[in-house]
Length: 82
Image 1 (cartoon, rainbow, N blue to C red):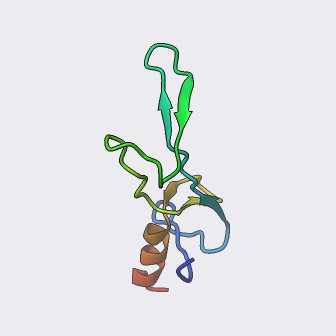
Image 2 (cartoon, rainbow, N blue to C red):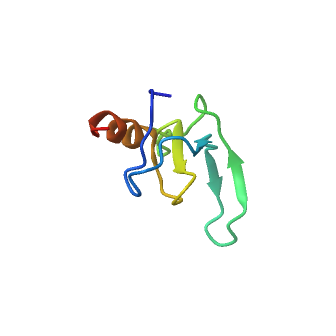
């Protein structure tokens, strides 16, 4: 976590947040049924499967419910005048 947060939506919350850990699970699904056909690891991905490159954490404001990347909340706190 990158220091203090401030919600960019409601602009008042500095203390109540939900930290959401994102864990990607690479899978191959059947296009007709939606069943998982194969599970991968990042070491065994086939050439047509791009590994997850998104953020490890997302943050949800505990007041208004906004969910964004962690850096949005940290950046808004850094740039706001208190």
